[in-house]
Image (cartoon, rainbow, N blue to C red; front, side, top):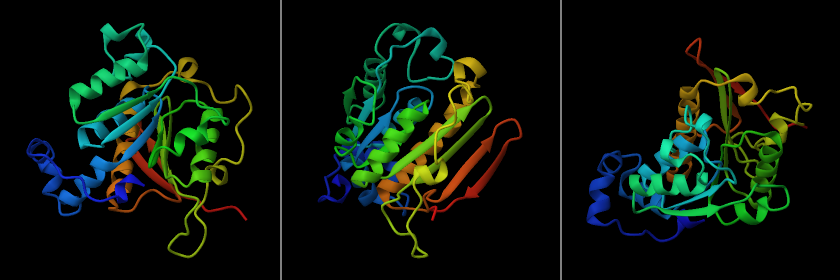
Length: 256
């Protein structure tokens, strides 16, 4: 993984830009160099992908890959805050790239203009150190999770709907501290629900700020994984109820 390669010197401008990270003992210069060397793939430049991409770019992640095959529509703008009114009708990839380079010109942005499938996921995922899933359908979620497990890449998964969100970190290719195999996405969700059972955001609605909360939590988990700090949400599903302003954590394990 790139984050384990020899340190990449920070320029004087980068030292000033990331000063608030560098003064944190948990991150420091070494952690910022890991962020600079990291290659992170983000699935989707929509509601979850928007805050993920913005905060990872601001944090100094060296390379951000984005997968999306959609264009910006007016109904996206209530929650997909990486895009603006002038971007309506253009590629989400191009809109997101322009926004990220405005935030941080030191970041390299790689665009993947296609829909991720079980057939192409593994070849793409293997090019990156870490994957953050902001997709909105189960077919993509399973494809991404299976690919990450196969090529041994950490996955930060999240989902949102109406006023609720959830987030977890998947590293099923590793052994936990208590000596058992970490759970996979299929341990958490053995199979997709029947078609039509879980309504889409277009059908059920979603409050825009919810995607900001959950997407920002995804970015935080990604930063923790890259820098090696804290305790990632491995084997834990963090649930957020926006109406009650309540967080709950559910532990889950690998199925026998």
